[in-house]
Image 1 (tube, rainbow, N blue to C red):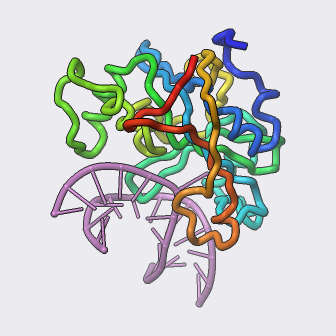
Image 2: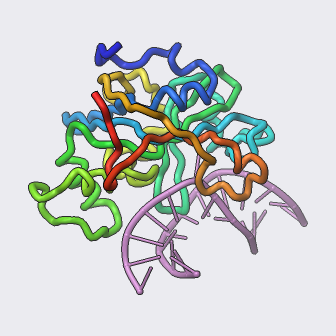
Length: 216
DNA sequence: GACCGGATTGGC
DNA sequence: CCAATCCGGTCC
């Protein structure tokens, strides 16, 4: 199925681990200022609601920030971290479950120049080439290979919190990108979560020479 | 009202 | 290794 239409609500209302796994290879689309910024999702993490020690909603915590997590599947949960960056999740499962999938990495496919320039303009310095015409795939990937970085490059900010991912300008679709393998491993940066830090709830693809291996 | 620290990043 | 930088969350 590669109909280039937004994934439907039913895609997201399944359990968070399934959604996290199946978002790999799908294309995140954000149209901003008339330009379509697109990236193939190559890394995700599932946060599994009130029983998941690593989740912001652990223990049923329900605050202004976490309220978005309790929406049903298919909404953007965007939060600020370290006072500097924002990270983007997509909610999963049913209303009240507080499951969400963190988007940790994408590979730019459309609007590459715009993403590169956004990252150069708004991101903190990185020793990459000054000119877009010199940019290698590995350089471009460096603009979106992290949860904070991809939000900078794709123009995703706190305004997008609570956005419906079935909207015209912000959604995920299947452009037909595939990988020979989807790997899983423990989630990143959640050492505080005890045993939950070991659960293999991070999904990602193989890379070679600093670029994800896409087939087809 | 105070205090603590983070689902990150880039530079040293 | 560590600073950046601010607000959410918690406790008093």
